[in-house]
Image (tube, rainbow, N blue to C red; front, side, top):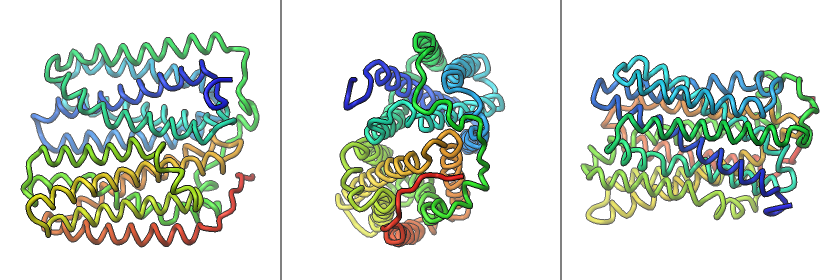
Length: 399
């Protein structure tokens, strides 16, 4: 059989493709940012906004694409187009407008890739879906952790020639998937053909009572914790007047927590239930946010210690929340993961965009108060959400 009931060849291919794809996608976005950094600062905001809008568009269209087209066609196509977009950057690196267009397209493909992986997990790893979900979350998080630093290092030496390495990664994944698809042409995953053409609208998804109950407070916690990623930059660098090294190390602690939490901590939080555990993990992020705000009241080395520890709390909470919620949704969707998971991803992305929008309303003198207030709200919503969903019954989606 393989590892924990999973087939060796399939696990290896899935790990390689997801790891390389996640790395190439994140590394290319960093390359875009480094190229635009010397120009108008508004272009950087537009870069990440357009990338996120591309992701939202992918999730919206994914609900219609995935039930109609097999993942054996979608995945190779995504990597082939990703390779072409990365190569295009080499020729259009001097045009800020075209880089922004490429960021939208890359955001679309990256989100579609992630949505496809989540949607088909039950079809291929039904014997151990929990472990497969943890591995998927860990590998995806690893791309967030290692891609920026490695890209920054490589970009300093070879600059835009880096695209040849990243495009080669995408084309390698394309070839690997094509060869595997040809080899396993006669093998059908579980439930690949059942309910394949059925379309479920986002309105149907969001009107479901279980979905409303589960996602109600997550819209608040995800939005406010997403705002943290933006306001933490001026907070540490300007208000606390600390060095870029401290800011970078704080982000590293957040990344460390994000990386280790799916495997090490998700089972602990899961003891009270998948959804309740995810909400408590969100509350942990709120504690970290309040810790960031309280750091401004400390002095000497205590402020640095609290920043690092708060960053670790935020990272662990984020990783556990994502892992347990995706596990719950994969079980809840049943045979309709291809129709429903894109709607779930879309909901998360809209919350992140709302968080970005909130930061535009925060003046610099309000940052400390915002961290304390947002942190308190996130903790309250986390505890309340855990209590409301403590007796939720694990159901399956029914038409």
